[in-house]
Length: 159
Ligand code: COA
Image (cartoon, rainbow, N blue to C red; front, side, top):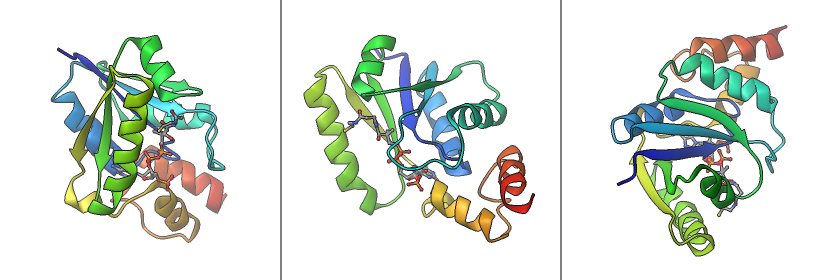
């Protein structure tokens, strides 16, 4: 039986939607790795250290391990000896990409299984880039990100 799972992403930055998935994952698994990709294909706003730090600040549970990883997710999973991947589903439109990623990961490492958790409906439209855009334009983002993330965005965009 899986006792641990990996929730990987770019988390640029972490949002309430991601935190909702982490909370749900903690009710299913004893330990959750929140694994932040370093060699991100997107141009990140926050450095890997900043992204990790913001997650650690927002998740105060010692069953959550926050760390960076590079390269293939399956290699990282093998390194940790954890073969359950958590993915959040926000809407039907997420499914096709997730399906492709899940089957690719399994083709690369047959032991891998992906567990999909439905994000709370109130976060179903949220993404890190939407949060970055709202932060840049000075919108109220209190409902979308934890206060430490709001503060970091304000430091960048409001000086
Ligand atoms: N709440 C809020 N936003 C969410 C969310 C949720 N519950 N779930 C997803 N999102 C957002 C993310 O913030 C991200 O927003 P952005 O595009 O504005 O930055 C977007 O939805 C896409 O999320 P996701 O699909 O998780 O992408 P990601 O970049 O965060 O992570 C990896 C993708 C890291 C898991 C994947 O690229 C990977 O495994 N890379 C390693 C290389 C590899 O093994 N490749 C082969 C895999 S097939």
